[in-house]
Image 1 (cartoon, rainbow, N blue to C red):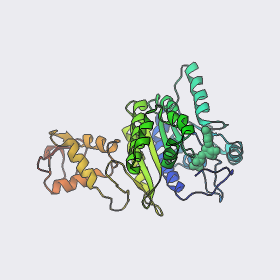
Image 2 (cartoon, rainbow, N blue to C red; image 1 turned 30 degrees about the vertical axis):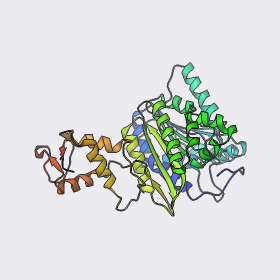
Image 3 (tube, rainbow, N blue to C red; image 1 turned 60 degrees about the horizontal axis):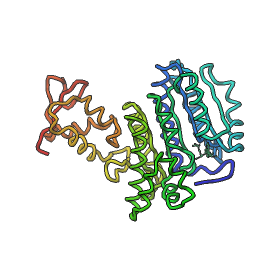
Amino acid sequence: MITTSTLWKLPPHTKGKHLVLKNYLNAWFPILGKYNGRILFIDGFAGPGEYRYGEKGSPLIALNTYMKHRARNRMSAEVYFIFIEKDKRRFNHLKSLIDPLIPELPNNCKVEIINGKFDGTMNEIMDLLDDQEKELAPSFVMVDPFGVSETPMEIIERIFRNKKSEVFISFQYDSINRFSKKEEFEPHLNELYGCTEWKNGTEIEDGKDRRTFYYNLYERKLREVGSKKNVIHFDLFKKNRLIYSIFFGTKHIRGSDRMKQAIWKVSPFGDFSFRGVHADQLTLVLENPDLGPLKEAIIQEFMGKGWITIEDIHEFVSSDATDYHSGQYKKVLRGLEKNDKIEIDESTRKIKLSYPNGTKIKIKQDH
Ligand SMILES: C[S@@+](CC[C@H](N)C(=O)[O-])C[C@H]1O[C@@H](n2cnc3c(N)ncnc32)[C@H](O)[C@@H]1O
């Protein structure tokens, strides 16, 4: 959806993105705010701050999540919010909403609103830091454009250079699909992917295969520029129609796990639900989720590896190798144990069907 008006009606699917953002930041602020001198929340495509009927936009959601956080007093870090918005009218509107809040902010919290473009502004910030031989503070960077333009892979790479920085990207596949056929959009896609390999996708006839190609390439590029980042990818569907996709890159298994928890927590909402990308068509549902693909993934990963620890399973499930999070695998292990598919070193636990830290597990061979 692309609009030229200053405020627009909140599309119902945007609610999912906002809930995920809020859930994740609820975990992110206290984790990073406790152990770092400074943390940054950067909204690279901030928007006007609210929608036509007063619903809050991402900058206000982020700021409120921090301000109302139960553990805010225990976060010693300086918390910087940087909101970047290209459109002057939307920038002014956002400013008119944020300015009255400034006197209420605690001393360790600063907000800067910039009327500029995401890529140019980020480059300026990072050039300045390079000149001072400083690193970008641990950052959560939100990239939420209309379409996919002006989101260069080069900038993502620069942001990722800081080990603790995370990037949350949302975009509509439609834009890639539409752009890829038009010559004038070639530079946009070269920028988006940081290469010209995307052009091979234009030859793919089947729509689903083409989408898989474009997405796999994007994920691969994010992994390359992120050097060992976990890259998570979920798609939001309205019934069987893909609406938008979320990509999230983080160096930390814990960040990847928290983001997956944040996504599982909101799905489904209304007619919408998120789907994972590892298990074919796995639809995320909070109540009675399908844990079959998780069971298969654990067996595949660990069968034939002898004794492993519960920590190995925890790390595997939390990482970007699965669509699941760490709150889900113990139920799978209980099922496997009851069906005699795993062996437990009983000296490593006291209670049957429990898997405390240090529990040793072996996947039996007969699956
Ligand atoms: C999808 S909206 C953002 C919505 C907002 N993140 C939210 O969730 O409430 C995209 C915004 O990015 C702005 N924009 C477009 N191109 C931009 C660019 N290159 N840099 C910064 N902002 C841009 C648009 O004016 C628009 O307000």
